[in-house]
Image 1 (cartoon, rainbow, N blue to C red):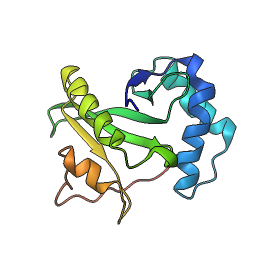
Image 2: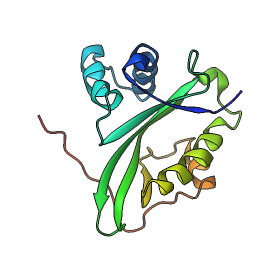
Image 3: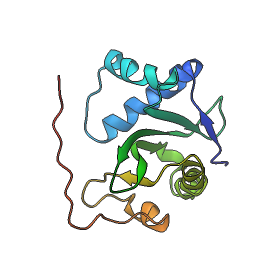
Image 4: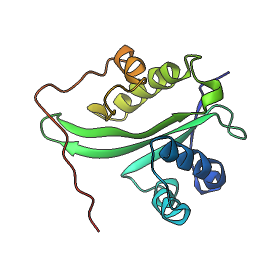
Length: 149
């Protein structure tokens, strides 16, 4: 199975939405479908602050990855954060996550992105795939956040 990446456009919403909802549900969240559609739509329409990719065949994707962009003086420019990275459970463990990162990291660097970050819960089984791709804990920093209305 191929870990090919396809940049999402508005035509991909019906394929992406259930996968994004499944990713949230797997993390213990109950997504509101309308709110999730509203959050995904600007990315699919070309909002420069993030992108979404389907993984695998475009007509029958096996996963997706959503990346948001930011800026950091410490990193020296544009940063990328993996917001969601989900591969269907029935095709996990076949190396696709590593293949996606192996293709994505140089592509992001080629577009001027200076750092890539992912936030994982303690004990995440995905830690290994990110470590093999060169991501490591940022010593001395603990993320803090607040949702704004």
